[in-house]
Length: 298
Image 1 (tube, rainbow, N blue to C red):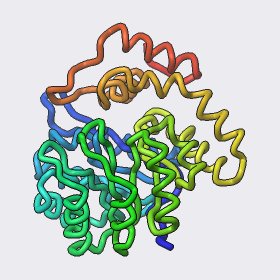
Image 2 (tube, rainbow, N blue to C red):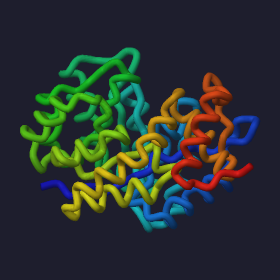
Image 3 (cartoon, rainbow, N blue to C red):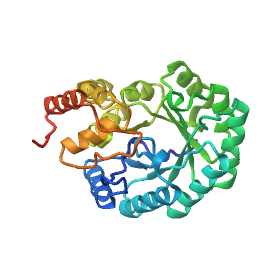
Image 4 (cartoon, rainbow, N blue to C red):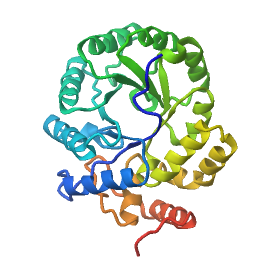
């Protein structure tokens, strides 16, 4: 059995930026503290929600290092270090390892993609050269490439491949993977609204975008399910489903940064090609937050 990097909810935290696009480290500090104060179980830095694809390598490394130092061991830190270039992914992962990250999150190669055999070679190459646990990331809506259950099974044999963030939405794939891999591959949901169904298939929680806004809700739902209070866990998630849905009406992280700004945490600036949220969608998001009693600024 592989000890999971974390159980429960890990926030895929945003990267706050100034209007000129530079990283706002002071606001990142505030966001990290907000998450920990509200019971989050882990922090995932430089993921999709963190706009890692628009950070240059120096910024990427600075943000990882800052997060690790600010968290200071209070919860596990997962660093996004994926690339469609295997050697580039290794460089970023080695830096994250040296900085003290508890795990690295590595997405499947995108654009150039690869075959299933190529996926096995890509991740085995990385796992052989790292001591930090690897979490695979399956998000075919962004990469146009998905693991098969047999590929998961082959990769699960490597002692340094700890688990997978599953955002394919393919429950047959997830069920088959859980059956084949058992305790050799930990599974976390990569879609907030799939958290409870994936936990019902043996998953251990979620790497969550919505946790930026509702960290306590996401963490509590996972805790309730783990404690066997499945009806309560499901009820809590369904109660906040409208908020979650409104956080994905436009490309992530546009809505979540908008929500944080509405909540008085001004982290809403983004780098092109991302652009401020359309006013009508922002109004619906605001209404959903207010409906759930989440305090918004005037």
